[in-house]
Length: 160
Image (tube, rainbow, N blue to C red; front, side, top):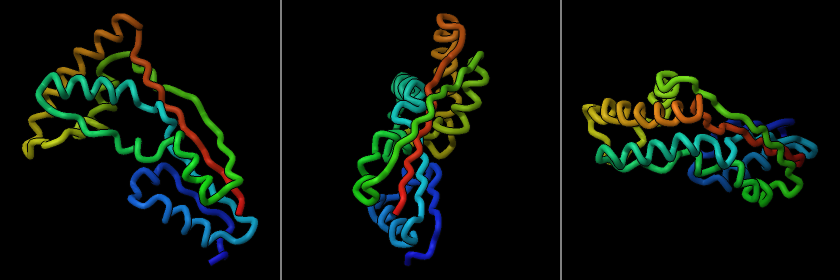
């Protein structure tokens, strides 16, 4: 208790079931004057890709799961403020800009392709989703010149 100068939680609170308990624990271990730094995705991060995934999954007969990161994103500063009332919020706005569907599909395959309910054990959903997502991405790239996907971050900082 009260023995740590700084606690940092980088892109992880969305994985924590009891976020309030985790924040309380951060507060407990911080010494007076200690700082907490919590970084997460902005509320709109990857929304465009998530929407394409939902549409593509539905088109090939699957149901997309909610994005894991939506459990704690930049819009959840009020949760931090319940434990750290003097929290300050800093937002960094950025975006991925994919010039081709191939580059976007590699990112998609590494991050969210398996986010479907009742995913088959043999992974046959992957080929279907990659094909469907590729078509949708190509349509956007043809119309807009690239696929832009907002991907900002939010930093919450407070002193005990």
